[in-house]
Image (cartoon, rainbow, N blue to C red):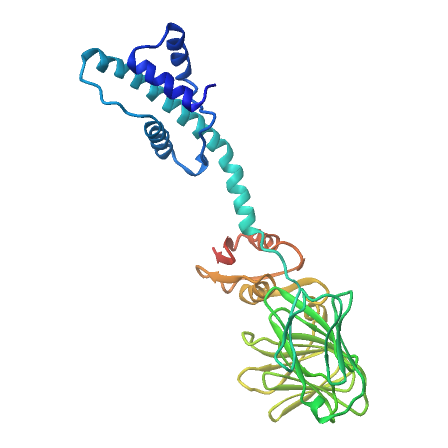
Amino acid sequence: MITKTEFLALYQKYMDGTCTPEEKKLMDSYRDEMLLQDDSWPYHNLNQHEVRNRVWQKLSDSREVHKQPYLGFRYKKWLRVAAVLVLAVLACILFITKQNWDKQPAITANQNNKKQQILPGTNKAYLTLANGTNIILDDAKNGEIAAGEGVKVTKAASGMLVYKFSKVNTAASVQQFNTITTPRGGQYKVVLEDGTLVWLNAASSIRFPQAFTGANRLVEITGEAYFEVAKSKTKPFLVKANGTQVEVLGTHFNVNAYNDDAGVTTTLIEGSVRMSNGKSVVLLSPGQQGVVAQNGASILVNKADTEESLAWINGYFIFRDESIVNIMKQVSRWYDVDVEYRDDVQLNEFGGTISKYKNITELLNNMQLTRTIHYKIEGRRVIIMK
């Protein structure tokens, strides 16, 4: 193998007719494997036509072109050299193209895998303090992260956010409200100052006072939250969500109040709750579910599927003959993707259980096995089709 400089010098001597017999043999032998040591560029993005033009242009630009008087033997000699160069360029094209074809499937597969590596959600949220300060909780270090009037906010080693109250009852502390918000692809767990545990699902929020100093313990939520309320015989715990109120003294329950769902659903696990919306009021017992439609109709009480309602806390998706639209709502929140439907697929129903910590493709592949839908992923968009 020779360098580009050596090749061009040899080429010029060949054109001038001053090559020695040994140099002519070198020129002829080199025509089938043209590879210049100090000449390279990323060929894998070029097609054959582009490669040919690139090689030819680089050779042409690299040499000094001397205009020669027209002579018949020079013209014939140029034809011989041109033939050598064409063969050399073609050899280079074939070599590069072969290398490109050999590598391309692996590159494409790797790129597709990267595009489809849509990972499940993690523990992350944003804490907005009463003074407007925002703290990214997944980035915050363990230990004390904020302090207010009689209240300290600490991030535990488990990632849980813990409020500690020093029993200072002041008018100022009553007005201090904080908000924890989870984005799509996030979830978070918090211990309020009274000891109540709250799990926030993806794309949800809870607004609460730093200290429960009034006659009740009132919080407001959007999205979905699970509560294990600390017992208090004198101070009821109230949850407001989309016009619906849930009142308890001490109990475990789940509230689903996403704006894009049909209504507000409260599932009672332990204890008792009073659920109200306008003039409609019901008492729920463990294992029951109250549903308020968005149109403000009366509250319907049904037997609850507690396993399905609490699946998100336990790390699963559980679907019981669920429409693909409702399934993909949960998927879009947890994996932070948008969903597009093509063809008439919205009425398809699916059932099953799968870990929500799997790659999104595993969940989609399981639905695709039914042969009622297909899917493709473009960036962070999932397209569902027949």
